[in-house]
Amino acid sequence: MRKSVGIFLAIFFVLQFNHVRSTSSEQPYRTAFHFQPPQNWMNDPNGPMYYNGVYHLFYQYNPYGPLFANQMYWAHSVSHDLINWTPLDLAIAPTESFDINSCWSGSATILHGNKPVMLYTGIDSENRQVQNLAVPGNLSDPYLREWVKYPGNPIINLPDGIQNDDFRDPTTAWLEDDGKWRILVGSQKNKMGIAFIYQSEDFVNWTKYDSPLHQVADTGIWECPDFFPVSVDSTKGVDTSVINGVVKHVLKVGLFDYARDYYMIGNYSPVKENYVPQNELNLGTLRLDYGKYYASKSFFDPVKNRRILLAWVNESDSEADDIAKGWSGLQSFPRSVWLDRNQKQLVQWPIEEIETLHENKVSLHDKKLESGSIQEVLGVTAYQVDVKISFRISNLEEAEELDLSLSDPQLICSGNNASNKGKFGPFGLLALASSDLTEQTAVFFRVYKNNGRYVVLMCSDQGRSSTRNGLDKTTYGAFVDIDPQQDEISLRTLIDHSIVESFGGGGKTCITARVYPAMAIGEEARLYAFNNGTQSVVISELSAWSMKKAQINVQETISCTDQ
Ligand code: DQQ
Image (cartoon, rainbow, N blue to C red; front, side, top):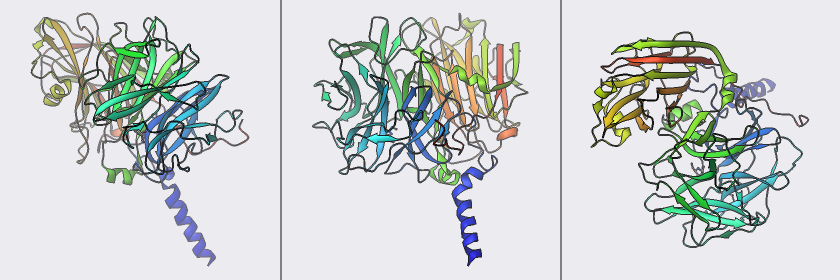
């Protein structure tokens, strides 16, 4: 009898903790420095904030399996450096009539007297999306482990004329001179994407404005809106409540129908309560990232006066693969975000704390890459690496004319993979490549002429990223707003087992991809610089660092006495 209990317990433990024990060869796609839970499904970042010396990240989580579920929870991790994270207990669970069918995304606000609060979307017992409030149970706990739901929830009900499942994702609130808080909530009506605006004095009683802050026809529901000021003359971030003559406002919305995060830059007038974007949203306008990157959320970090951006990076493999892996979803590496000097777009760059993971730097200077040549980057762990490369080109006047019938950059990239010779380009990096190059994720540039100016195209081509079938290998592409006559063409790529996160033109154009090589795994992976254009290019500088593994959500919890 005792023996069978022992066997049962042994099997139980093997099943329960299999994910923790599995080796890196069984789990080649788990990452080393990108945030992910030890197991199960994760999607949007929720309520990121800095509070009393600690960074908090909450996220959409299914604690019971690797697929999205009908009942979603808020999981919670804390960090002192945004690199290493400690998992805590689940923060918000679907338990009450106002959120029994899911606790969906939301945002943190720090109220007067340094009091953090959370607004989140609940799916109520009648499957309506409503907005709820939760507050820390114990403000003297530095990790804010306990969250208490306001008993009077929901604090905002579904507006008239809006369908039950079209009203979600409250933003961080901003405070105006009249002493009232404002928030946005994403919605849609007849395919018109909407950001409703609400105001409140006490954070409990909210009044909707008659007109939304912004809306755009035919864009479908707007998920996870984010509304924040950016300084017009500095790369420093500003608090969400700053409204003055030296900031512009960014309105970012996730278009559910396309799983893409678009943004506008514009002027917000608190007096008129209106927002006038410089660029109206359409499918060809500015995106935070032109690859796999969605439901992003930013927060102001008062320690380093910067605005930090996080986003969900979905898998590109199948549900069956996710079940086999036991997990699904990553967070992008945290990025600092600011307004470009030209005030026409944002710039994003990995937060400087990334340097704490750097080791074994290798570099190259002034290396000419003749047409058709490749250069292996030796001496780094190519499966876990931060690489920066910049290219110099000359005789630009010989560049090919851009075919204007192909003005969608993603289409130009898909029609011209890394082996299609052009004049200037393709040149760039081959990430997670096998030694015979059968597998490679090519991140590269092409330079064209158009209407008397030069156009730089950036592509991330996953077409040959794996010999495995059944993966989404979409090629991504976008233009980079730089002048190659004056600026070098630069690329920074964070390669981490199954994610290739690229920053072109100093962070003006970002493209993130998920890839699952079958051969280029671990020590078998290679990294190359290449030039497949007919013209030579010069690598003016290449620096690459092997990346140490961060401590991300390893299963040791903070004890109750650790305060
Ligand atoms: N994910 C949440 C929603 C949000 C969507 C549900 C965006 O609140 O609209 O997990 O990915």
